[in-house]
Image (cartoon, rainbow, N blue to C red):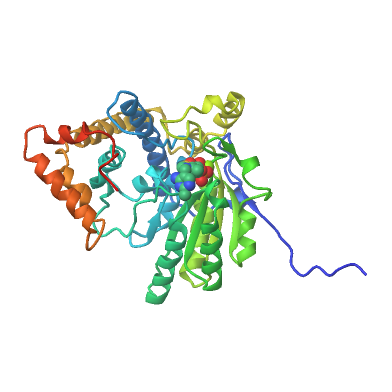
Length: 375
Ligand SMILES: Cc1ncc(C[n+]2csc(CCOP(=O)(O)OP(=O)(O)O)c2C)c(N)n1
Ligand SMILES: [Mg+2]
């Protein structure tokens, strides 16, 4: 007797816009021209911002920076399916998410200069700063979604993690919880092909990352993450379901990290340039431009105007970032504890004393390594 099939997996992949700008009309989501143009503006501007941030880092004007290029659709489009009052927690690579959520990018730069004043969100925003330890936010977002469910006002919580991070236990715990409590949570796996130097193939034996959803009673779908229309449809569907009490969704956006892991990495040491060239042909911005042009929504004149506007915007953000008053070194002790432990109180007092002397901070920097100063 053959065994009975008691459950089966049916993993779907959503693709709407091909690399030549052609659309699968049957799958085309309802989206007005204004939103389409906004998608393009966001993706275009964050690409230019990324290029400038890299130049700033290379010329010593910015700290380590994680590149976004190639992932613009996955990052900039889901926020368009949300309300400002929803909750969003991206990863450290999520500059495009924050930008689409209305963050002033001078703060994005400030953050990567090591200044915690860079975590400034638009007034009224519920969004949160990412965690550098990968995946630790995933269970917190289940908690956020649970809070929203209890409040009953229909808000959703959206979060991101990388393909590498999807191997961590955090996602297992978060999805178990989100599935069981039918939470209004959306988990986007930003599968960019690499976790630093580990390729997706070596990351997990799972055929897709989307299918992990089935293990937890969560809806799951794989999406062409370089296809802004597919990302928009998958997110709007998931948001609608979540707002109606239909529970969580896991969306695997298959995209590609076109650049290094961060400015501290050299991807040419571990990956084949042919792979990068192949993905360049699947660029999310160029195919969207072809689509807009065919719809008569875009032309070279508009492109030129956007280019000029973008340069002006970035110049302004960089100027504002570089003109920020220097931080008070004592700020590093703020906002960590409600009641600071004694060691920190002593260290703060020590620094305060040193800062009373001219060049005091420099004296501190030139002290020998921690040896002998900490038990
Ligand atoms: C808990 C933890 N372990 C290790 C690291 C070091 N680390 C930083 S990024 C990264 C790879 C993450 O890859 P992925 O999740 O695919 O995200 P991507 O950088 O590709 O966006 C690792 C292992 C970390 N930040 N946190
Ligand atoms: Mg990755």
